[in-house]
Length: 504
Figure 1 (cartoon, helix red, strand yellow):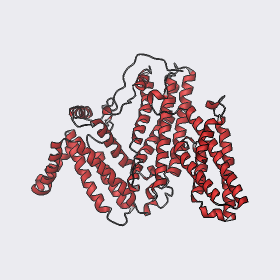
Figure 2: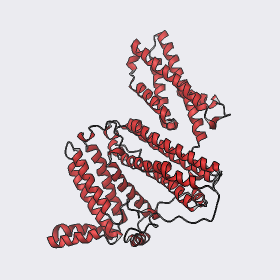
Figure 3: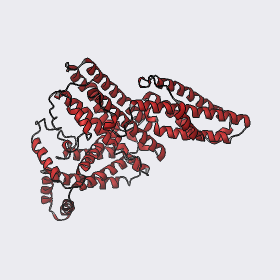
């Protein structure tokens, strides 16, 4: 199925069509002049990252975008951990704004701060502030933004010296930062004009050709927004630094996940409410094409909604409060991998309806197709089942011979396999099965080796792993029933080789 081609017309840049805002066209022209004359290295990347952190700050202040399990009474707890994340994001904004100013402009900024604080009279200082608020050029907007965020940085440093910080502190800092972002003339990412023309682009030439080949300009515009938003979400996820060695620095990723959470709600709204009526009106499209688009959008919206909820309930639950680095890092890695997979799959599946010749590898070098996902998941579920079978067998044999050491080794093997599985295939597990896996992982993790010496605790552990083995058998049967695995029976040769490595 493909969408008929017609005369291709380019989409208007975001913010270029609506002329209702006074002076908006002039603002866009002035910003473009500034951008194209800017000689700063990596200016596109820096400008995009600035949007990410300004947007992320705004969304992080909304507690609905944070993975908080118990929301009742949340305003009564200490918000110091959240304020540290905000402080680090504010520091990043300062660095990015300074990076977008030339060396001369940075010197002028420091000199301006000195003049304002030391030499000007009250009257002249007020006039100077008034001129700054006009922000007649992007350079002046950057001055204002940088200066304000330096102030926020100092305030947050002082606030975080306190042993405890209330929600009132968190809320009032939100108000200050939010007003500063909203009041910035050229660098407010929530204005209709946005930053878009300089970096809101799909960098895949193959996918750009695909989008341009949609003949209907209205349909092309709506589908392009969906594609653009998913590509942008993938770029947001690239700012999740899973290698951070300090847990407090790793928690900085929660600001990115808050932004992704918020933008996903917007994406779901587009998929469920805005785009379907547009597609239904395109009666020139073959019925099967319209049906495929509508079904695909409905499935994608459902998957995003469920997976985001599960991610907050399981992988990142109460992440701002966690104290153990490695379990949190695993949750962050899985969350990023899971969302990356959803957006990549969503882009390719919708793209295939437009262009049946599209290949996932054409767009994403690391793309894993649904067939590859199912094959990998089936193999690892089979391996999981075999590892548990081995644990059961070794424990029964150890009980007969009254030998504890082989039982300990088998539990270590099970734990090693769980670590492998969490990092390789767990991201492909459907949302409604993930909680069952997670509970089993936790039970194995808290089980003490010394409990193998206690008959009752050993028997309870055996019941747990046997019950999970039965669950894996059902899961494996369900995977084998997937449409993409039809007529593709499981070959155990590769699984046996991998199993031997775990059991050796």
